[in-house]
Length: 409
Image 1 (cartoon, one colour):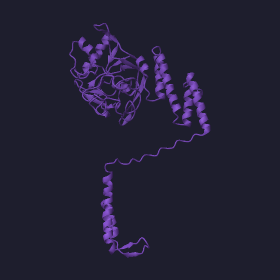
Image 2 (cartoon, helix red, strand yellow):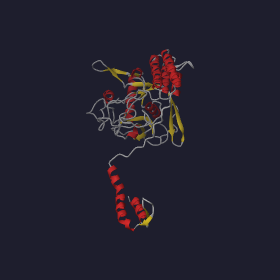
Image 3 (cartoon, one colour):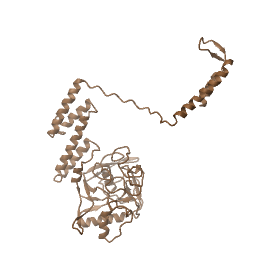
Image 4 (cartoon, helix red, strand yellow):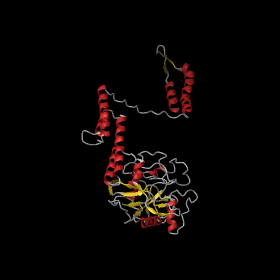
């Protein structure tokens, strides 16, 4: 360390030194050999220290954990009484009303006294689960009530997922006919999404607010075996991508026009209206109405999407089976991730004029390119962000671009 050794030498060049016994000034000439050796030893110490610690991890200075506020005996008794009363309210289905006599208010009073009280936090989650039960009981007689209960649950506990039973109850598959064994041939499984408002940030301009009606969207990407029924009926060859891997993989290597032809074929077979999703519909379904970077939160986590770097096994040479990994808060799988997906929108650099009703924006196009949404098994983790978008030539057939469909309700 030159700076330290140089400083020390400069000190020894001074002709006056001090003895430790009486601090009397003495001549420095006789100390030169000793100080020279001491200088060498001193200057070597930092080097030895650095060499010894170079292989070790640097010390991490963590912020001190704040002490939890002390709870008095009187407050403990108050918390116990509030928790008991809240449980009685939940049992009587006084979840968030009437005012002054409901479980939610009591749990929130507990959290004011003790912000990390697990029983109160679990109680609020229990209220959300009760709303999911009410949503299931209201379906399909009262879609509006179902939507209201789901919204209430996901407002209480942001990020909470639909229970599997409720997601399955909101899902459906239209019949396309029967196979040679008499079994039903089904269209892709769809799930009904509640109406909602989508707020999209626009660089340098006010956010774009889009109000979407209720619609249904594929829970999984359209698979190769689902596409096979279309290919057979229209006497087309199956796309060759991943032909030897699995029929359950997402269909890829199809153009946007071929994807639209598949949607039109389903519409004719079922009498319903199928189409590619608009960019607004795709974002709404992928984000489940929550404004965060990824569907699971604001920080990237491995194992929750299929991408190059997501650390999902057996996806380094091809996409995963359609419907792989967990579903998001709306009950939709692999969104975004696994394969990029065609939309119904042509490319616009800014989203400041997205249709306010959520319909496809395929007019006044800025170039002859189509919006492709989401990341894929080939792309980096950053492409699994909710707002990531890319573009592709509509006639291109790429190994990592597939589809999911919307059904107009």
